Image 1 (tube, rainbow, N blue to C red):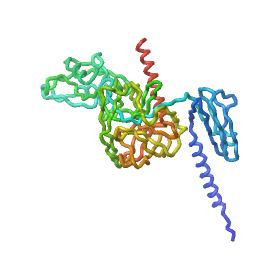
Image 2: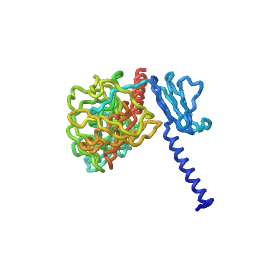
Image 3: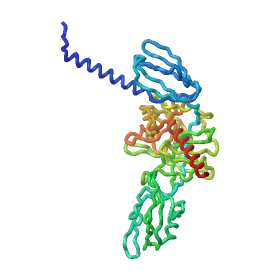
Image 4: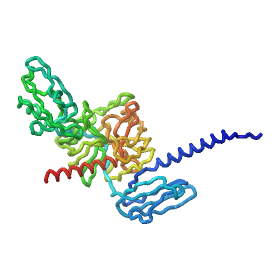
Length: 434
């Protein structure tokens, strides 16, 4: 028996097939990154499925390529000729332009992975306003001179009456030395402001006060991500150190990283992130100098080479176009002051054109780690992620409602930010010298 298909049914069938084709077409294009980095001494293979093809410029001085065309799949071997930037073009049937791909040929970069538990001590540039309170004067009146003058929680006090402030006790000394109006220079986000504040003589202790609570230093425990034996630089944490009360990112005056010993690990549970609790030791033998605190990690210089028993020599980094969904492992320290490796699974890769701390989603699959900590816990931030012999990123955040999962940052962002901060420091030093 033959069944006749109506025109309307045929239309809907064709529409469904068209939508499915469009979705798969769009997903395939999205899965190809906008930017590709290739080391100057490597050859990279790319495979493109029919009906797509890659188009190259015949006058390209940066890249050389060979291709092997098959019925369903086209294979391309791309070899750099020199450092620089070039472009590829994804086309449909070799004729219709679909997407441009930026290709950068970069110097070979190798570092030694971390995984060490480190202590971080930081002195803040200026002092951070973390709270305000009213002051009772001799007449029983309650006044907050700072609030009335326009100061806010989160402001960073840089100077008082033209004198740069060193710490919280210095602020109190400068205020107490003046019963007259004081001029306070502050930094609010990226702007500089000046406020005139009239101190109040406190009835409580007969000292002049302006109604502020301030903080000038911080300390904590984290994980070293990498160190470079050539230029002695390091990166750690993969995210910023911020004030616990205000969320403000601390500006570094100076600081150091130290050896840290893990005392205990509080397991993470849904809704309750766990925590590594540790103590600093050998405080008289710091590991390195802390230079920069950024949204994407902390950076500085190592005093002496650090030993990682798992890696006697440096390994290459992997750019985001090198990363694949699937198995990888992290290095971290949980007990016996020993770095260990734990298996994870990369579930999602967010291809990015600018730095972000949420580049990947990873899931802990190693039963040992799940048993010890429940997954990712506070203090593991900065734990390096390695896949196919390359350092590809670092753990940054835990999912509060599922501690077996977390976010990770691409290692290329940490390296780029470190280089950028160093260049800015050089420029600032030159400006000061001039």
